Image (cartoon, rainbow over the protein chains, first blue to last red):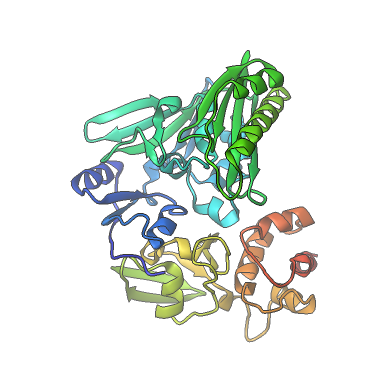
Amino acid sequence: MLLREVEYARPASVEEAVRLLSEHDGARALAGGQTLINVMKARAASPDVLIDLNRLDELKGIDLSSDGTVSIGAMVTYSELMASAEARARPILGEVSAQIADVQVRNRGTIGGNVCSNDPTNHLPPLMVALGATMHITGQNGDRTVPADEFFLGVYMTAAGPGELLTKITVPPGKSDGFASVTIGRDGTCIVNAAASVNGRARVALGCVDAVPVVLEADGADGVREAVRNANLDPPSDVHASADYRRHLAEVVAARAVQQAEGKR
Amino acid sequence: MDAKVTVNGQTYERDVEPRKLLIHFLRDDLDLTGSHIGCDTGNCGACSVLVDGVLVKSCMMLAVQADGATIETVEGLAQDGELNTLQQSFSDHHALQCGYCTPGMLMSATALLRDNAHPSEDEIRKGIQGNICRCTGYVNIVEAIRAASA
């Protein structure tokens, strides 16, 4: 497919990238491109300028601090997360990355692109919310941080506004985490997914059932099932699952995620 | 924009529009038509190539993004007119029928075997997960890759 005509810029620094994003109304950051290039083919998005982040080393790299916090550059790919010794401090990061699409997509797709596109069927928005991650955003007015549960604002919308850039995500220490999903084919698009982290109570974030991850806290798998039932979910119906079936699956995957998390204590 | 790439050992320098996808650049500008366009939606993997040693679907990357890169395509596998071990194994095991997916399958298998010289059947299946074949049912493809790794 021939894309609509587009300008292309390859900034040499995050500062330059932010300046370019602020200067052009129709500018979009190009991360791994595994979503953006396809929606450009379909003309569902038609940016005037692409600001390519792929050569910005500032946005790459995974660090593990002495207190166990994992710091992940926005342009880290799923494959890099899977292979990283530092990311293994929070094993669920690599485990979920390995469930995203296929080798080729994992080699180019990035953690920053996944959360910033905020497609409700993506894996990482609910995961970041369940883990209590912190999103680091930079813009012309400086840097700020946003907790993951305040980052996702709506379908395809996040707290990283026009002219801003997500630079990294920090994930606090922990290991008692789980993730479960029902997908269209193995490692395909999620019909429903749930991420859980247990630290005393279970903190669960459900994906695919609303515009943004739905957060619940409960005790144990049975408690979580009840919490999902009481959440009055109003998920979409489509060719893959009716709303009723999604509600049922939400209960099932939430319980599975919590059981998985409890098994790692 | 100027893009300079090395494909299968040969260097090319071309002026390309930023909107041009890498697969179109390879096929239309460089006349390397071995890599195929199957779905153009990122699903099928027929356009898979190696960019700086990394397996990618070339329909989800702009040609200008490959500026300075070393690219390997299916045309680079055979040496002096002789099929390499993997290609020969695909032939020996009837791992293709219509052959449309084969260039992508070969590149994914190439990447897999470089990473993991002796993959299990599960690892092979996971390695070619991004490549769709509508003819074979995959059994002979998996068998061909397994035999090539032995």
